Length: 518
Image (cartoon, rainbow, N blue to C red):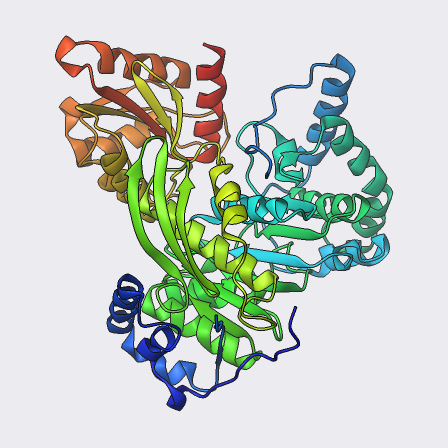
């Protein structure tokens, strides 16, 4: 690495178009992205005054398989006992906005989260897929990684991964029992006991330190400032697209939500910003200025130059902060996944100091191998053919819109049947409206969670959106899947029919289990 220091400029030194233009005049497609971005949020100029902009002068693991139930009965029993103990704590949706309890746990554990550098990820949609891509890139560059994501698709062990794979049930149980005495110490000293998510976060940070890992990739549970994960000093802070979700806790506008999510941006960090609504971008850039953080923005310093639909995914050219990376195959569907890939690439470049410590781009072949290995279970995942059944964990209107666009682009369905089960408190009407143009019919159902919206209540909303003739109600998920597959197969003319199962991660995880057993 060079000892060259990062350049620092005031806004008066150049405008957005010049940032890309002085790197090279050859990137016409990327210049177009820059122009579009400049047109999109011209009001940000005053916020950016005084900020520093990240800029450069210049065989990984095969996916992350979802673990099944432990083969060893004793291991299965021990894992179940731990899950039951964790379930006795506050659930993930019951929050007391404070990091005091997790900070106390880290203190008695000896601050394990300080033992490795971290990339911290927040946003509304795309966090887990982006985390998996970052992990794959770091693994490809021969770093040992820990990844902490939530919620899980099928097994709680998915939440804590080492080197691209979930930790074993035995290690999960061992880690829990290792920290349990310290958890109980904190429980006794705090007004409220540690929550389910706080204990899991402590387990993840302890497991990463014990491994030990070279880098941690950490996804927030909800928000940012008071999220339990926010006791790390993320040298790189990633903000995926912000939209309306959890409005009862985070705020009623993207700007208000960004205020909370911006809490992961630490002093002197590098911030990787996906494209945001203008009010959210203003808040995040203001926060970056306040803490002297370096910023790289999608559509300005990095982005997707080009993309083409390919068999099994898409072919990309990505522009990173350090250069252009062509012929990148991503085995995931949709423009949103391509944008997630660009964000992940920029985050890893920032982690390695590209654009600050040196101008050299990452090795392109290694980048290609990493992206080609990415898997993201439950996100535009094909789990069956004849008819094709796709699973996607979209659970809010913005996520549903991205999924609908991806399905339309990537699959030639002559008729698509939806299976939807959602959680209470979600904008189910907005979600259904996003899917209405692509669903010929929809089967509404429930998942096993106590938070699942009742099938009848969901059906009432669906009838308002689709009309009574296009809605079928099946309270049991297995019956709903069978009904949807039957509808897709019922007439020969619909040989190209398919099924999309969506509405929540829990719905997708349970459907995945049912379909893979069948």
